[in-house]
Image 1 (spheres, helix red, strand yellow):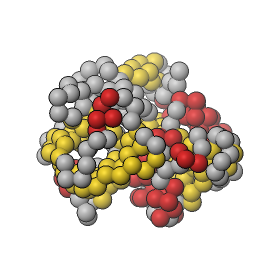
Image 2 (image 1 turned 180 degrees about the vertical axis):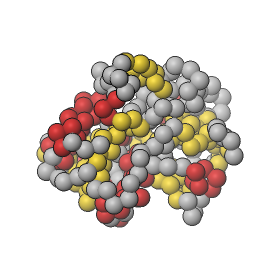
Image 3 (image 1 turned 30 degrees about the vertical axis):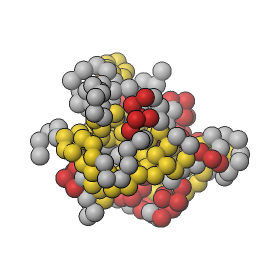
Image 4 (image 1 turned 45 degrees about the vertical axis):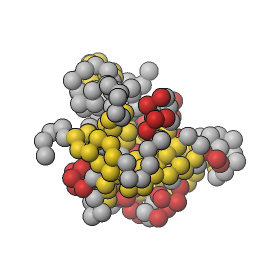
Length: 254
């Protein structure tokens, strides 16, 4: 397979797991062998020019499947949610740079809302070395908690309204834990707070950024994001190609 490959893949399973949130499992053995936690796929919908970038939630190399958990955010994802098991779609995958995995390194996984799914693949590789702190608006919005637990991760949940788990911010809950590295995905204010926590602990921190994408392979400027080079100079990188996972201390969060 080449640098960027697309294949027609069959949907093995689809499920609505929360309001507006869907769980898709694709038969994709070639992609599953290559994929790494934190990468994504571009899914082509017939009749639409731009593909839909969806983070890879789970990788089963033995079973030859890729799992995607996504939220309806517009017409494209609303259309995607209508597909059922047995349907086929064209996937361009795996794309981007994922999380730098180190076995046995106590790693804090912090996710906010739909930023939780990209972290599940990391939890699968880390097992009991993972501490997952997941944040949601309320009890009804909680997703994947049991999935993280089944993988051996210490799993904690925070909700904005206190209807489930810890009442408060994920960073307030995470600050009570011990860890040697941080992986995070979620809204920008959360990522800023996560980076501050990691900096306070003097540990490596990696953020998975979400940006609107066009090509998905770095050929356009649709997902350009401001970064800092080694000398501290500002430049623009591509979330799709240079990321979506970046060293937190090189990211300019505006």
